[in-house]
Image 1 (cartoon, rainbow, N blue to C red):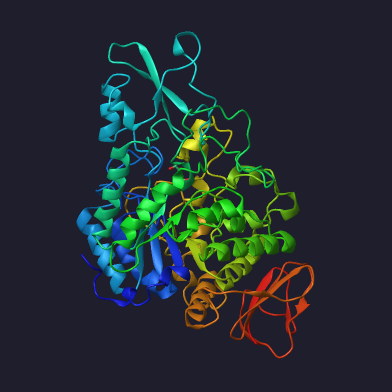
Image 2: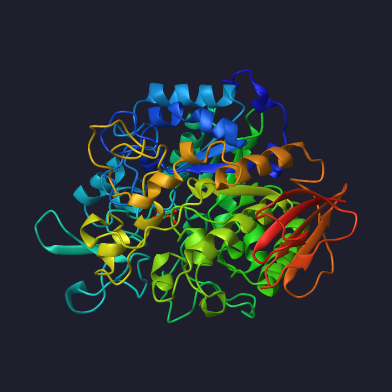
Length: 559
Ligand code: GLC
């Protein structure tokens, strides 16, 4: 089946410069009042996305799921979770988005299934050593009676990465690997059934007109043959790691073969069908190894997301990102947030010199004082920076409203398995997943109809004043800033894919030129700075002061 006739077919290289809007469907818009967002809610809000001016949407998993990890525990890859709607709703959304010129990217979860997937229930029912178990990673335990996990690998959500099963005769049995929640067993990518199943799943959705996939935990699929112990090896591996030293379950060299095969599937379709990898590997050259011409099209640039709001490290990460991407001919992406990390407003609200390297969900930030107004200024400037850099950009729902992380959610409201898995030591990711405000009043600020069930995560009172309808038409709002920036970006020949040239503007300023005739200046210092003579202001993230660029402000200039 080919795409419906629409503007989405126009540019075969669209993914090299696209602005992709991430929809977390549980929290975007609730059409039926059950407190959980759904596909028809997305359909109703397509005008918001069209007015924003995004090129594509990426929708987090919408497949049938017991929801032990908000849909990242998939029990059937080729159907729709009833809470989100029906296959007919999904097909209507794809058609309507395409008609609005918006491409549709889904989220595929190939590292693990749900423990309710038919293959895993069959594996549990079958005996050790059976063909059913071979599709997952079952091993005997170590120690007396096999009562210790098979190796020292740890779950991302806390505790050992292994769960012990009870065999059919009632005795404690083998262990299975699960790098995330116990309900998310890792599959065995050495098994031909797994390869076949996922390629069929890609085709299933490509046949329904889907334009691409975000690939969950793309760097995790292949495990070291011997499942050898980690023995304290850090990950990401440090920059000076000698060649040949590999982590036993992240970024194993064998993973590339899987994506070469996926690329052949994508390339067998008319119209570009594209991939974006979720790949946390640290070192740039290991990221861009996934972006060689016969592998993935793009990958999230998490180094940019993790960089503090300080000129030197930001410039360094931008430069090294671009150099590594140019080397493989792939476009960079610029990412400020997603459903796993603390919202940028709240990250940038912290004293940036005090940030420690590490996974940027809310927990590490809680110990640092927050100046949310400063965070908002910086997030506005960061938006203009990210949209001016060469390549594509991602906007996570709510960034266009300037939402901050919800930091004070009561423990009993928290749903993220990280919270329970760490015994509350890590608050987890719920604070960036709170349902969006669309209107200033109403039971759920317009997220769902009045009189419906409470929202699945509670919304804070300040969400009302940040609602989309409040910001609509307000020239000073974050929403207006994003709309204006996206419109300028779409129409400016210098923006999107291409190159940049750094300009000298002092240690606290990031300034670069893009041809023809465009410059971006970002003031990360504490004093206003002069802009270049003769430049015309196109857009700024705050008003200029006597023609000077204030602290924590970005400007787009015509040269
Ligand atoms: C990815 C997802 C995250 C999920 C995890 C396990 O990191 O973005 O939300 O919990 O994979 O699937």
